[in-house]
Image (cartoon, rainbow, N blue to C red):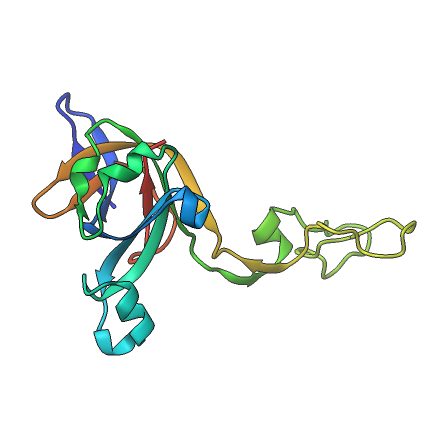
Length: 196
């Protein structure tokens, strides 16, 4: 993250993303596949790490590390793209609202205080070591723990979508897009940018 000064002198906290270009690998239509979509490839990987099936699927367009599919609402939108076309950052405009999805930071196995915001037990009435314990977890009726009970467990590593983020600047030469605010995930996480 960094900050950008606007024309009126105010400061906007921004996240800098490297966006594309992505290459169209495959087109899917409703007759053959049951839905309309465009599959794109991004990033580089050594071709030795790809199987022959992966190399064949990429049709000699490049050794892409990531493949992603974007569904299209209309069949007419499918005609705009051809296999081998490059989709670059010019798809977005400044001051436009977008939504961003990525995998959040993994935090491992966490207790209920950190994971669900429990307050823990009090120190009074003879409770000595119960500051961060969950307390009672169920009623005595069903004689089991009910599904969905908030308990300790793995936290993070979830797909998180943040909507209505604003595009502050676009650097077409370096394929950089500056988005106002924070974005889920660590540095280097693959991010999916969509128009709402």
